[in-house]
Length: 179
Image 1: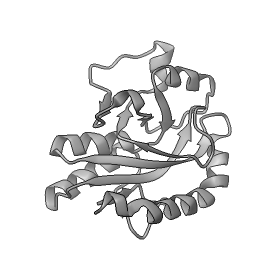
Image 2: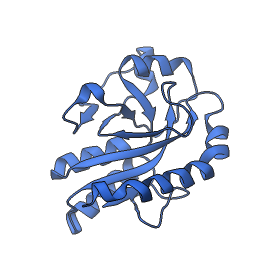
Image 3: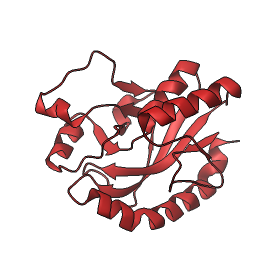
Image 4: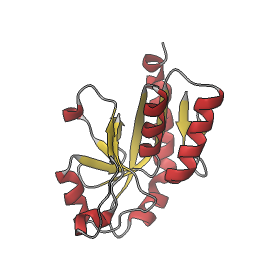
């Protein structure tokens, strides 16, 4: 089953599950309880901490849920905030999820130092729910912006082109995932 966030990120071939960590956790849990899929593939946009360029398409099976305050030594968490379903985590690009978008580019270097290359609001919830239900999962992301002071403006300026490129990529490559 192919999933997407929703709102302005919808595709004719994907089921929208919500925006942000909470909506997605609820939406994907409902799907898994009512009609468990054999595989989940999330497709959507992502911001880059600097390692990936605009319109790069990145596959991942690994996510984190780290807030920017972690790097400022202002917080701690008792929960496991990194998850991977990849057999080779060393080659993975971790995708960080938060309900907030990073606009301080200096924090990007801190994420990169922890092997976290992208930012997407939903992916951590999708991996968490899939892991709970024992469902194989992955994500395909297209970079729409860098995580910097103009992140939102760049996202808006690049979003339409990025969604078209992602849709074309999925149409071209989906056969190998769903044989």
